[in-house]
Length: 171
Image 1: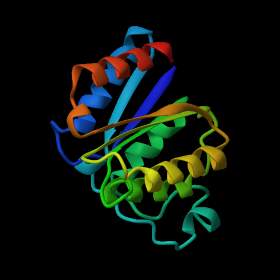
Image 2: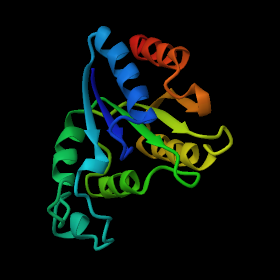
Image 3: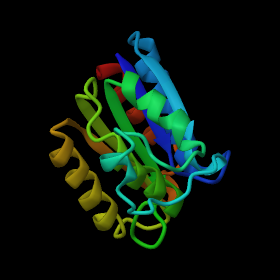
Image 4: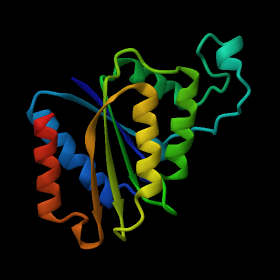
């Protein structure tokens, strides 16, 4: 299966990346193809709401930025993993921009499954991000394969990373 992981963390060696790596290693061990798209290292503008994509653009966004690379990856993905640290009770702004821009292409035909990986300093801050994820899963009619969270000292702990590797292997 082709798994696309949207990394919404701006920190190259942060907690979210450690979680992504553990999950990806488990999934690779089960023969899956993994592509990690580092949203925060790309130039992706917010949606203009101009409707060009649905009127004149035939599913193509009028903005020509690094989102073009993500559109290409989405057409091949069979599973989408959204991964983010929690910033002010939600996903990072950079990740939000990328998610909003998927409006141009609608629901990719091969995409069937989804999962969510969240990292934070506190355990009582996930509600907004989880709500948005569930809305995406419902709208795109994806099979929800679960949510993994880590907070405080769980971040980068061997126990949590082993849990993520095992989760990736089960997929």
